[in-house]
Image 1 (cartoon, protein in one colour):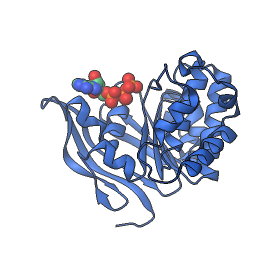
Image 2: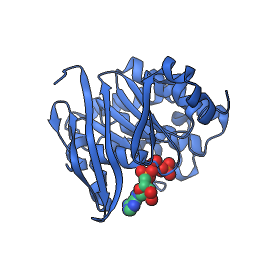
Image 3: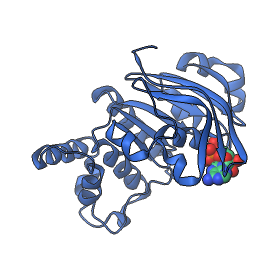
Image 4: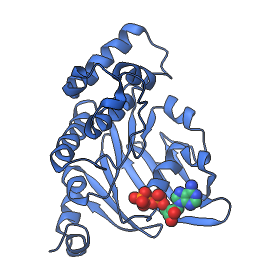
Length: 247
Ligand code: ATP
């Protein structure tokens, strides 16, 4: 076993409702401190892969039926999502899922729910989130009034409040204008570098994700069909043709 790996997914199969086989042997590695992206068309199984890692699969009647998910050296396949959060692994769900009738600060405090350290440390981390997302500091009303981009920022900020070692991000660009997508990706890369948070990011926006990642995997129909470093994937002819909008 490799101590430099934060996460290693080994040949997992996932079945929903005991019958629907969605992942057919998926393997991927995420080294400590890396930003790894998982790309592929709708329905390829990207979100399912993230949920198999975080344990959220269990809440949707899904199960890892073969293979293992090794996080910090321990097999956590079919584990509880609360426990993975306590172990420093936090999933930011697709569609943001912030609490609209609470304020920005209340949402951020919720992200710290598993922490047992002092209020002053939690306050300091709220300030840290505002340092990376200065727009959020100006929004004092309910989170439901935030723009789509601001809600995405808040969802990521809430993840940071759990003091994670690793974040799983499901389609952070969804529903955002091109300008905001660029801003959100730049912040994600900065958080990865400056706070040393390891990241696994699922995206439909292959251009942006490949530009900012260290390594990428491409999934189709429940399997990984291609993987490589940013440079390898950006120069691959098939990737250019099918994912980056023409050679
Ligand atoms: P998208 O970008 O559309 O979310 P994806 O690559 O993330 O695509 P998944 O959401 O993982 O794909 O879905 C993979 C397959 O699993 C799809 O065929 C989907 O219909 C099926 N699926 C997803 N969630 C469930 C569920 N809770 N119960 C049954 N089938 C599911």
